[in-house]
Image (cartoon, rainbow, N blue to C red):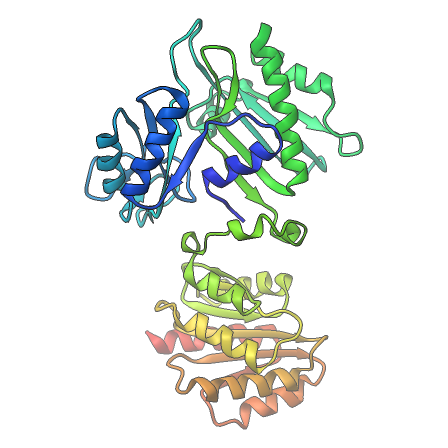
Length: 406
């Protein structure tokens, strides 16, 4: 589950990570009030107005039809009002959003952390994620913060520092010191970075996150180390342990069909193809997408109805798939292990009748317990539904209906 920058910083702050302070706002009036609080708190007229969307590259992104950036510096309350009015309710396009962009519903009024002092501020990069190949977490850091880390990794891999953490013992003090040393930090800044790394790793582990990305991590002019940004991804499977984090989910940032599917306990991911698929089991879903590709089609979605497919779940799956205008056919591929094929077939027929006329052909491939009985139910239904038992038959039917739809 992705969270907004301000929410990610809230999580970090709970574990003692120093953050760039800020106040979230949803209207220009709230933004101005937040600016005044920040100005009083920092004794500075400068503040940063940051759009809050689930995508990176906001500083380089632009509001559709304008030259307005997703992150801007404000020097007065009037600036904040003008900038927030231009951002809120409008679509921000970045490299990560694609051409369709994302609507800005919230902004963060943050303190200006780049104040003058005894030394120049310096930006770093730091990320934590699971290295599945080595079965342990890895901390990645770089002196090249504040820019596209993917480009740094591709063109200058030697600038990426990696430190693997043994899960049996956790992060050790010498590892945090090694990271600070390799980043070239000395004196007070080095000590601050060691503390930062330790607190950041603790936050990552104890919040059951799957990824932290802090870009940039800032060394201020007075040698403080703080998170200026926070990209946090929480592990959905562990949210039951964090009832305080679950409400951070922002459904407005998610695909509406994926939200609808989750509310019906369906696992759905929209794709760009023309054949909708409904399957029980993730592995079978992947195989089904291969069948669609081999038949000359393109999968329009990944949809796993789980082991207990029935009329209700099938109907919900139909309604979600049919909301995609690109779908020209639907392939239902069910293995009757936990649930009998005849029950699934009955559910398909009942769901079809409940929805009414379905404008695209449906292929139902049933294999497993009572597969023959299930095929008979489909064939005798009188509906525009084709039955198959073998994968080859299902592929041939998909190919046939796609040709007929052209």
